[in-house]
Each structure stands twice: as structure tokens, then as C-alpha cells.
Length: 263
Image (cartoon, rainbow, N blue to C red):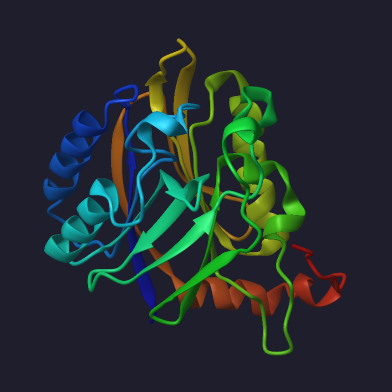
């Protein structure tokens, strides 16, 4: 039986205070006592959803990426979350998928939240990231990407589907929490995959409240875990045979439309 163990950390964030956030998350991660393989942090976990990349951006050899390398190696976990990265004069809201051996994958947020002028400060990405762990395929996305189903849509292959788990990390405000919860379930159902959403809680620097509502949802849309309002650390195990049996019993993906996503 192939299993994969995740820990999600739903937390408040110190507004634009990198040192405080890294210290807080380090304490939370090192407090974990039960077995876990992948630890998921929210979007822009070191700063909050800041529109000041000129003040807070780092390079890929900077403090936060090196912090992720150190924590991942020490705890022997895969660690993921997004940070503000500068590269060749451009700023990115970049998800980092850090392995214990120091190698990593990256995904630059595709859909930038124009309502908060994210598109005025950051450069959007143009490629998806699907990671592989123990025979599982994991598709990684960031916050506002959730509203655009084509970007996450399974492109069925002759041998099966592209991925097994869909993860969204976010700073998603409470005032739109109905959409957050409904869309996470929709993404799980339409892609016949486990779906995980990890959000922050508390007020940001603009007094915008975040209710968390981090969730784990199965391939039929049933909610396996939901954490509203409070800080939470939750470890859970997903079972591959359950996913495979459901896909075999309900092979809806075979009837899907063939399409290509353009950069």
C-alpha cells in the first residue's frame, strides 16, 4: 500500500517581518513528533502577502531558501511554501519544493491577483510544476490560481492521469472564504484527485482578516479535514490504493476533452 504523509501548518503571519516568521515556523516544524514526509506552509510565509518586493525580495541563494534547505535536511522532510524572489530584475511569488538533500523545484505563480495590484509588482510564471514522490505525482499551485480551472485541469494520458494530489498554498481572505471552500472541492471532483488547501489565519498589515479554512478533500469531493479560524498543525496520511480504486470504478477522466495549455 503506497501512502504519503503530509503536515499542513495554518498560522498567523507577522506582517513583513521575515525574522519573526522564520523563527515561528522553525519552532512549529521542530515541534512535530509524529512521522511526516511533506510539510506545507502558506503563500509568502516569510512576509505575508506583501506588495513591496523591492524591500523584501531575496535571490535563490538568500536567507529564506537557505533556511528551507537547513530545516528540510534536519527534519528529513520535503518543505514547501512560497517566498518573494528577485531574478534578473523581475520579482516572483515563487513556490519552492525543497528536498532534504538540498535539491528543489520551483513554481512561479501564474495568476497574479490584479484586485490587490499583484500584477503591478510581480511577474507571472508560465509553466506548471508536478513533483514526484514515492510514485505519487503532486501538482503545486498558489492561491489565486484556484479560480482558473484550466491551469489545474488533468490532461489525461494513455496510461492514466497526470497527477494524484493538487496543493494550493494561500493568503486567502475570509470575506471570500465561500469561494475558497467551494473551488477546492470543485478542483478535487473535476480532477479526480486529493486536494489540499493551506491558508493563513489572522489580520494582515491592511487589517484584512484571514479565516484559514485549510482543507483536505478526497477525489469525490468529500472533506477529510477542515480548520476554520484558529492556528492549526495537522498531519494526515493519503492512501494511493483508495485513489486508484475510485478512478478505476469511476473513469470519468477518459471522457474528458483533449486540449493544450499555451504559455
